[in-house]
Amino acid sequence: MKIYLNGKFVDEKDAKVSVFDHGLLYGDGVFEGIRAYDGVVFMLKEHIDRLYDSAKSLCIDIPLTKEEMIDVVLETLRVNNLRDAYIRLVVTRGVGDLGLDPRKCGKPTIFCIAIPMPPLLGEEGIRVITVSVRRLPVDVLNPAVKSLNYLNSVLAKIQANYAGVDEAFLLDDKGFVVEGTGDNIFIVKNGVLKTPPVYQSILKGITRDVVIKLAKESGAPIIVALNKMDKETAQPDMVKGQMAEHGINPVDWGGDIEFIPVSAKSGMGIDDLLENILLTAEVLELRANENVKAKAAVVESSLEKGRGPVATVIVQNGTLKVGDYVEIAGYSGTVFEIQIFNTILTTPDNKKIIIPKLPNSQQRASAL
Image 1 (spheres, rainbow, N blue to C red):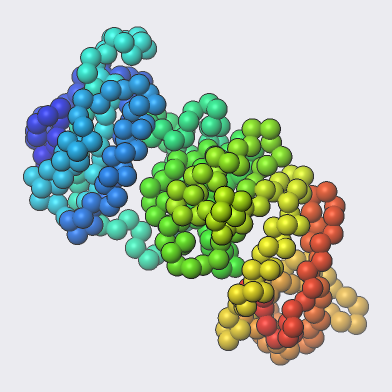
Image 2 (image 1 turned 90 degrees about the vertical axis):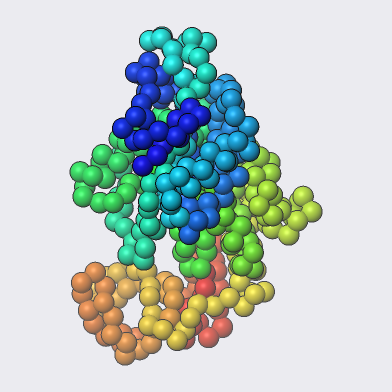
């Protein structure tokens, strides 16, 4: 293996940095993790832009131009004859003394490593836990800087290892899910793609940006819920600007995407959000697939005299009919009776929101 180190390629055994390098001593530096697939480097320009933005935030003056750094990455792949690879590009503060003062450091240390790597997960999926380690607040350490200080993620990974699982999800200081140890998070729930916002202690991931762009291009309806808008530090215009970079333009900026300020804590904006979701579903005639077995969430259950076990459920997909065989938490039985009710939601401030049952709802599940 050949490794790029400060202007030349050296054998792996000769790729050495000083013990006085501040990247080693203090995690004082930045890096990018980049993938190459079949000889094509994924979003290379965007990775290099982020590397230089991170370095600028730390006042590290990289002695190469962006074009020269791109050549470093490509040449590292060429000399190692790699087409499917993981590339680690690192820039440290450089060699200094044992003090923290960055002025004592010389020029930055730059190295680039490329190793063969197939797709990470394939189609098998992974096991994940939520850990007690919290992501640092944005006013403690800016998550936009992809620095060498990954101790927060290392501690979370240790908990995942003890639990015998593949990855850990971290929460922020308010208890909201933010990201994995080294990855952004998306979920698809009831046909809706969701991801934490960038102001919520997460790295503005490049692959994350691509997923958002693909979702936009797919024509899928988009409604943006701006959460935590009850906080004095909320910056809705900043979020709108970041989303506009991906072509998701707010209605009040002349675009076609609704941005709804909400607060899960106070209930602010919940009525507007539900109204917009229902209106979008009605206009686009969104429905779940009725031609599959029903999948439902149990809200509550009880044992009623003369009726037996009774459960209140929300059908999320498929069709639930009298006579169907059902399994719930290891118990099984047959559906003898179905009653359809309006959906009543209670906000945190105890307001009741009634969502009327849809036509033919005895046979069909709403896409919501």
